[in-house]
Image (cartoon, rainbow, N blue to C red; front, side, top):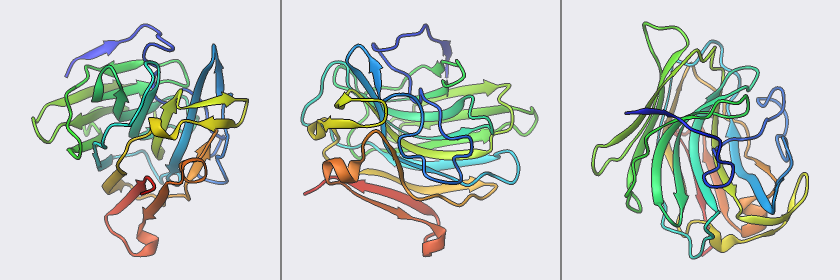
Length: 259
């Protein structure tokens, strides 16, 4: 893939993961953690679904999973974006490595790989576009066995074999795995910590699914957390985590819209 340094483009294409979390996201509730849900100019950023892994015993060697392209939302605005991704963070949460499945109505579903954003990084690979509903997207974050603090971040189309690949360098130890669904401008009437109105018809019309989740060294996934609003409470979605402590291996996460 081709690495590309992006100019800041706050609303034309907002980067995934633009807010900080608690100093240790592996302990405690991350609800409404981070910067304001209202990011100015009538824009809103939110994370209505996330699960953090417990802090790893040593730097991440690999994080792999399959995500599946959902069906399009019923409606969308030109400035609304959906991001569904796996990621890894260093101990200070200064940046995140993340293969990302994204949606905007002008583009449709696309995949790209990022080294982003709380600490100022905004680097991503060239996107792969034209994805089809229900297509499997293998995602991975894998340490280079020969170069310290270097990772291959990748998301691939199972139908075409095309991959969006980023080589991230000088990453520091990656110690906290993360799964997140993030939205821009799906909610409105937002304050510092919550949104009173959510346009649920801006969400996918089929499940957000991720399976075959594998992390080395192993992690323990924490309960679902939310920021600004909740898929379950605000839009009636059902969210299920299938984790090893419940007898599932490999692990999975499934969020389904109401029928």
